[in-house]
Image 1 (tube, rainbow, N blue to C red):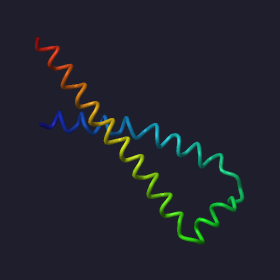
Image 2: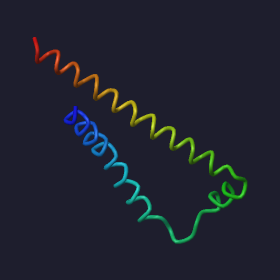
Image 3: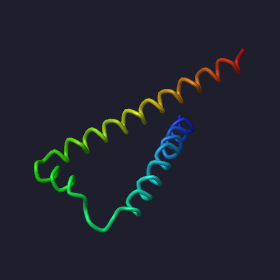
Length: 82
């Protein structure tokens, strides 16, 4: 049981690491002044909708990848047992 938990954790870290690296690169290249669009979205409160949609998309992709990895692992075990 402990091995399975560690395996899941290592997979989650492996999936999140590229996203964190991309985010750090994106923030490092941000211009000094903020764009007008961000100010307009923040002023109208729509920035929260944009952030929520992005979070939902990223979480959905991560869930999909974790489930897909589980299915592939299960198929690998079935092939190995034959």
